[in-house]
Structure formats: structure tokens, C-alpha cells
Length: 381
Image (cartoon, rainbow, N blue to C red; front, side, top):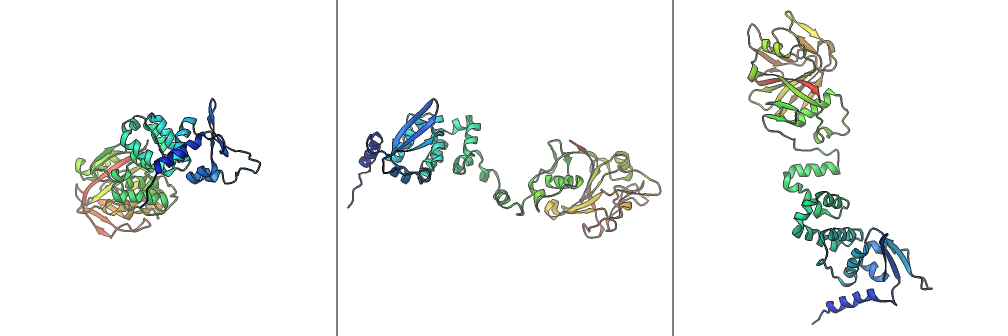
């Protein structure tokens, strides 16, 4: 049978702090005008604090009994006395400490690598002082993110695992660790959105798609493979000019609402699918009786399967002399690739895709149905 007399042992070690004979180190703590020199014992400090062990590794009392001296200006005398009582006697008393003092004590314990104290004080603040921390958000937030050891406080202010679904949280973590890791989730908005002055759309309801198109318009260089999925690029307001379900599916309406307006983006929702087709026209649309090719080197067309940017294909114009087709019986007509046309009809009756003048094939060739389509003019915010 063994009996532990820790209480008496703790008290005896604390009494060493009042010893005037056997100390071998003095510690100057605080800054003017609040400075104090405290006597202590190297062996105890080195065994209780990894930080002090490293700081004192090259300092040893000489045979001539010269006292070692160190400075800790970042820690106040009042806080260091509490720390010393813990180091010597394993006692941490918060009874007469105000909230700000406890925060300073936490910072000091973190500096001295007293992990046991750091963990206890974080838990104490969260359990008993959460309202005060919320009232002093800026101070606590700044303090908690000055150290990688204060993870509990960081989580208190940023409970990512609770706010984000598991996969998105995992994506964000992987993105931080490996910039070339591939996210598996898109940032989706509600079906009909009118948000932050960017777009009012029933089709282009994925900000990743809007961001990707905006990057291509501005010919932005992507620094790594998945930059476009991580940081939204939204420099434009998308001003709605036409919505087929609202204004009608006719060439007449298209030319009335969209002609002579530069920098337009077309979104086409393919019927009975989640696919979005479309294109960007940096110049204007116009009506022409017999048909006329329009030249530009900056137009492109695109397809996003399942409203998903990861599976998207963007195809730049290859034959710049045949980038666009103007015709009074045509809607938005990109090269001879995306064709929206009305043959002897008021309404579109020839809607198809064929690869001709744009460099990449964006979908299977052939006819398709339109559920809706929208035309936006982009305006720099």
C-alpha cells in the first residue's frame, strides 16, 4: 500500500519561492513602470516548462556562484506569480482574477509552453466566460489566432465543422494543405437568385459557373489547377436583357431586346437535363435580312453538365472570321456551332449543336430542346 502526500509536497515547493539562500536564477518580468525581479531555481523551471528549458539550456550557474538572469518582458509580475505557483506547487487559482487577467494568464502559459494550463484555461473561458468573450470578440479573436495552440478558442469563434457540411469542410482543409487538391463540392445558390447585385437568373444559379465565365472573359491566368473552384471572381453585374419564359422564344423579341448591346452572355437550359449551354459575345448582335458573318477573336461557347463547373467545357473561337452569325430569323447564333433559328416560323424550330468554328467539341452533335434561355449584358461593377 502506498500513500501520496502531494498536498504537503506542493506546499513545501511553494515555500522555496521565499528562499533567500538556494536560488540560482533571477527572472525580470514586466515592462516599465511595472517590473519585478523574481528569484527561482533552474532545475524546477527546466523540468516544468519546455520554453524555459530551452531558454536556459546555454545558461548555467558558474562555480563562482554567479546568478543566471533572464528577461520575460511580455509577462506581467502579477501573472508570473500565478504561473510560478503552478510550476512549483501544481496550484492554479483564478478566484481573484478578472476576465482580462485570465486571458493574460492564458497568453503567458502559451508562451511558456505549459500545455496543461493552456487546455484548462481555454475550457474554463468557454464554459464560464463565453458571454464576456462574445462581448469582446475582437480581442479574443485576435488573441486566439496568435497561436496554433489555442485551437479550442479558435473553434469557439469559427465552428466550421458545425457550420459546413463534412465534405465542404474537408475540401477547405485539403485546399489549405494542398493547393492542387480537387474540391468535390460547388458553391450553389437557390434556383432563382438575385444576390449581391451580381445576377438575377433562373438558369445560371451556380456562382462557380459565373466566376469561371468571368475569368475567361478577362483572360485570367489560373495559378493552380483548381483556383477557379476556390476563389470566386465576380467583377461584373449581369444585367438581364431577355428571358425566354418571360419575353418569348422568337427572333423578333431577341433582336428588339438585345441588338446593339455589347458584351453579352447567353445561358441556355437544355430541356429535361441539368445541362447549361451558352456563349459570350464581346461585340454586338444585329438583325440582317440575308445573313452576315461577324468577326471577333474573343468570343467563346460553353457547356456545363449537371449545372456543375467541374465537368464544364469552354471552347474559344478558332475561325475568328465566323465567330457569330447575324440574321433576322436567328437568335443567338455562335459560328455554325450553337444554332438557334426560326425556319419559316415566328418561333425557333431549329435548335442544335454542331462543331465547326469553335475549337472544342462541347457536347454531342444534334438537335436539343430549350427549357429556357437568358441573355445578359455584363457591366463592370
